[in-house]
Length: 78
Image (cartoon, one colour):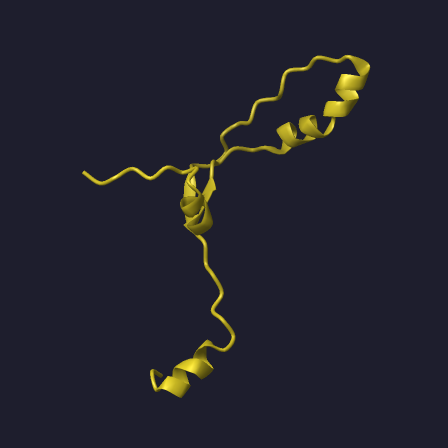
């Protein structure tokens, strides 16, 4: 059996984008009003974050360096 990768690992985070598929808009708006609620003594539970899409993993595409082709031609690799 293969090894399980920890999604919170820094190397995994640098090479993979993880989308949990939840809609975070209402939660982020709720978070933006945190100081308002604290100041006025309002205790409000955070809104639900409904699942709108399946969990997806996308690899991070790193751009190729500008001088790559020139260097490859100089050493005769291209």
